[in-house]
Length: 78
Image (cartoon, rainbow, N blue to C red; front, side):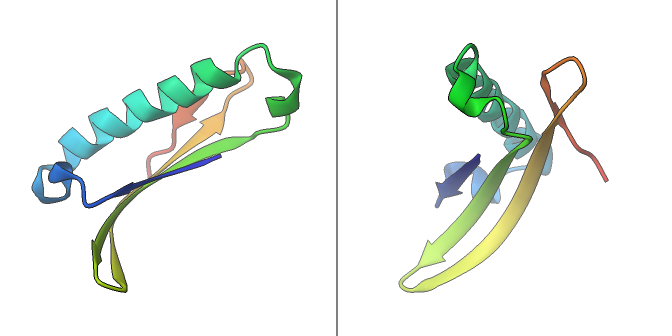
């Protein structure tokens, strides 16, 4: 699953603020998928923060959440 946040006010904020919002987005996506068999094979949630000006996109930050053995999506930190 993928969520793309375009021209967010958080693009110019601290990375920690984007991370907090990305966790909230992933949690909402996880809740929406819960109990629906069609989403059982989803292994990750990908949240992109993108700046868009005209036809040009620039990646601000990317967050990946992987499904754990406990069936919860956990932020992957590198």
